[in-house]
Each structure stands twice: as structure tokens, then as C-alpha cells.
Image (cartoon, rainbow, N blue to C red; front, side, top):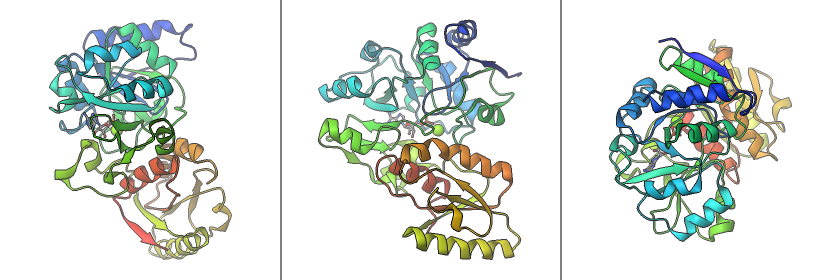
Length: 349
Ligand code: AMP
Ligand code: MG
């Protein structure tokens, strides 16, 4: 299959490309499209056969459910059984945006979307291309991140092409994703709304609105398969080809430890990458240093993370030594992704 890439500079003047993508969705095909979080690989969420094509193109395990994307608040009503009042408050505050909520599903949602669960994850993205595509398709769009399963999520059309060229018919190129990390997944069916996957809408932001929010244990720790609430959490995720090791400690201790490790690995003939921050970058002596951003701006660090991980691959590094980032605000989502990329290998500085 030939994969076409259509550039969208403006949803009005490039509407023919979006219409073409919408026709593919209506015909039961898959299309990659930009959202504010990462690129998604979408199909008609009400068509089980179309949804199946997403799993095939990605090589995604069939027990990992998809998020259903909508373009209007009312679209949610026929997709779920009940809408708690707290969810309405959250929709008013954070939709469209990087917040996914989990509800009891209506029979309209095929099992292929939810991997057989009786709940469904729903989000209204705020990217104009995503919103227009859903609107023009006239159906909700089920979409996971548009990468090969287990690989780093794509934040540019080129990343999608790197992973899925020849496996999907069309990519809409809307430039770089600004949030750069996947949405926050919030379970609204739990007694207290629970963050299953931290993302662009932070714990602190949700607390301000709800007053009580839990963070699932799996956010920063490996979870036992039997206890997994969000099936996506049990897979090694976001992994670049290089091995990743996280170093935790006070900034000066981390730098010192990383410098020692970098020297050792370099002596063994390995090409070393260092995932650094603005505040620490000047102190590294060895290796390919890439900067995530300033520790004072976790949202910027979040938006750079996947891009930087892919850059290490392009540079051909064998091992990435990553600094621990403080887990407040977007830092929680950043460490959730880095720890998975590292398969939870953490060294105390
Ligand atoms: P992705 O779209 O690749 O970013 O992955 C979607 C994430 O949402 C995965 O971690 C899924 O496990 C999670 N998810 C989707 N639907 C549900 C659901 N019904 N219950 C719990 N987690 C879900
Ligand atoms: Mg994904």
C-alpha cells in the first residue's frame, strides 16, 4: 500500500484534504491525523472491522483498548450509559483538550474498541484538524497513537511515516503537536475519579476542579498484570531503540553520577546519550547531550520528550542516561513515560 501525506496549513483552505480523509474513514479505512497531544491513527469507532485495521497496522495487542474521539459535547450521550455530574464539570473546563474520561459504555461501541471491557474512553481533542475530521466523517473516531506498538508516540507526521509507511493509506500532516504527550486518562467509574495515565491535564488541575482525585499506582511503578486498570499500562512503552536508564537524586548528584556512568559506557565502546535539562546541560563532559527544557517549565519539557527520544535513535546512541524530573505538574506525565521507556530501570545517584 502506498502511504500519502497531505499537508494541512489551514483547515479552511485545505478542506479538500480533510474531506478526502473523512471519506476514507466513512469507507472503513484508517487515517493518521494530528491532535494536540500526539498523532492518532483513526477509524470509524462504530465499525468493528475498521477498528480491527488499526490493531493490524500498529501491531497493537488486541487487549489494549482505544480512545474514542468526538467533536461535540453532545456526541458523548449515545456512546455511554451514564454521565456523572462531575464529568460535565470537567468537560466544561477541559474539553476540547487533552483529557480522556472513562465511562460505562453503551451497546453502540463494538467490543473491538474497548477490548471487551464494559467501559469506554472518550475525549474531545482541541486540534482544529482533528475536530474538523471527526465532524466531516460524521462518526466518532477511535484512535490510539499512530506509532508501531511499543515504540515512541509520534509528534510529527514524519514520525508516523517512519513507523507506518506502506501500512496505512493517508497521513494528514498538521505540523508538530504542541502538548507532545498523550492525554490524561481519568477513570470516572471509580469511587473517586482516578488518573490511570497522567498527561497534559495534570493532577493539580483536576484537583482544583474536583477537590478529590486519585493517581493509580501504575503511574510511576510497574503494575502486576492482574491489577492493571488501564491495559496500556502493562506494556513497555515509548521505548527508543537505545536502552534507557533513569538516574534519580539532587541535580548535582545526578550530574556527577551520570558523568561517571557516561565515561564507563564510553570506555566500553558504547555511544552514550544524556537526557539533560537546561539547568544541568553545561556540566556534562561526555556523550551526546540533548536538552528536554527548563525544569521551571515542565509543559515545555513534556512537549519535547518524544521528539528528543526519537532524536537519540537518529543519532544512533546505544544507551540513554536520563535525569529524574520532579513529578509535580506535567512532571508526573514525563516520568510516567520515561520510566516506561526505561522499563523502570532507576539508579539512585
Ligand atoms: P493510546 O491511544 O495508544 O494513547 O492508548 C490509550 C490508553 O487508554 C491506553 O493506555 C489504554 O489502556 C487506555 N484505555 C482506553 N480505554 C480504556 C478503558 N475502557 N479502561 C481503561 N483504560 C483505557
Ligand atoms: Mg500509544
